[in-house]
Length: 435
Image 1 (cartoon, rainbow, N blue to C red):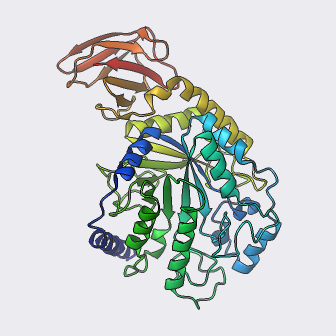
Image 2: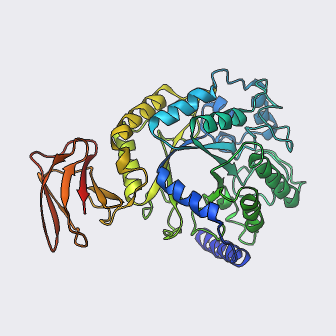
Image 3: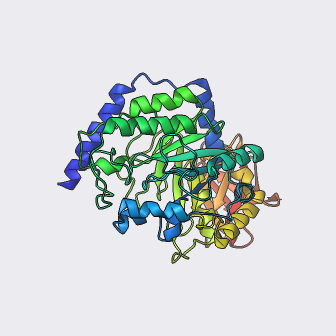
């Protein structure tokens, strides 16, 4: 029955979006922003809020069935003395990432910016009294890092998020409000985010799936999307709804999955857009928000492989960090950023500005492409030769990318055979083929 309801919801939502936004025409600025986004290839997700004080992830309010009034008391003790926007942005920049996506308001309803539409925010409700988004935005603009905003469509705190979805049901909220005021509240906040903090690269929505038991529910997305595009035409819209993109959306998002895969179970309904930029988001350890017991960080090799595989599938990687309650990045996260940056300093040319290569992903790795160059990323090979099924282009030259050493190869009607003096053992052994 649950699967039937979800299928009905998918159909209704897709129909609503298609009918209401069939006339959506991206502006010239928007189309350019899409290509710039594709070129960037690598971003850092930052999940941070008062939930970090519980050190049990960003869903702790829901998972522990915490009363909303008691949970709100966390704000009274939130004083992240270690927060330094300059250090954050510098660490991100050193990693080779080109943009940051920051959680402006998560499902717990707490706003991490100075908003006039709720006192439940970091400036008015905490002793810290600083607008961290303002500081982050200023530093991003200064250091040349683009800024995106995550924004939750659901709220476990407000009484006007109705009808209730399938999460946050035991937080003790009343049901006296109405959707109209909540919808206005969201749009007012989005207007603030797109007015007060300079040029914003994207709005990253999350939470549509919360209403999968209410298939008739109308999120009124067309009007909301139109508001965003009107305020900043170049601002891209992505929605983590795990469905085929709706009209008005500019990015297709894959959560914990590379495009075309469904290992995490979030991408079974989505397919792959042939026109929109693609982005896959993944955690550096196991959680999005800070969890003190989660030290299961992925190795630098695993993270580089994820980035390379995403690029080979024509997608960006949005890699997450959950800052500590004191406002600092965990030490392991800083180490991973530094090591990824060192790799990108050498191999960034084979990632930035590329598109998925003409040779689809294989067991041994992927290809990326730019101009008349095809970059063969060898991630897993146990032989001294590699067959690349490349039949559409005549190869003029083959070199090892890192030092431009000539590489022996042969080519016939079936493809190209690359020949190595020894089995490649680099984290990513990149061969540059010139047409």
